[in-house]
Length: 114
Length: 108
Image 1 (cartoon, rainbow over the protein chains, first blue to last red):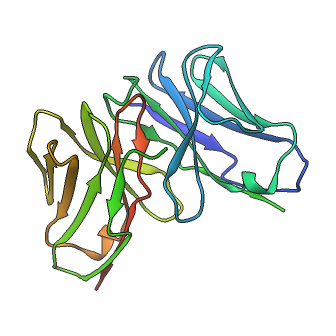
Image 2: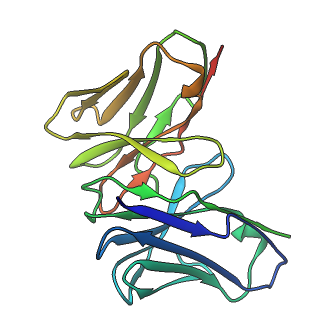
């Protein structure tokens, strides 16, 4: 069966510090991978998606970046965090792109920037 | 921009009652999905309804879709305290776009 792992689960970082959130998927090959951000009490904002190794599409201009160094690994990074980067970050994968199928989510990483 | 918008923003009911949540969207879709999120957790897929379907059932869940009105509803029958969660609709558009969600609280 397929599983998705995200870490760390919780992170408190000072403004201006770097960020690295990691997501890995097991039990499937060539998944489509996504990073979403959820502000408190809000819906999900799609940040990045990837259809393959090294292929990253950005949905929202910001100081975050994403990379996919391996087929089942997706990393969200920042060189210098802003207060506005605080939120709940969710990684997800799917078989089908363009919302034609189900998304499978990780348990999320809660980032607090102070 | 968000495609789906859920209504109401929050809903509080007694255990055993039915809960109805609505979703409106703006552009044509191929399918609409509903997800559930327990507090501080990831989202879990509940049901997918295609644009050529009008109604779909899964256990205590009933989803309807009206493409002429660009709206969908999620009905949870005989609610339980464990149904307390946020519920999101998501439409495909270009990529899966989520609404802001309905917070459901079921009181025991």
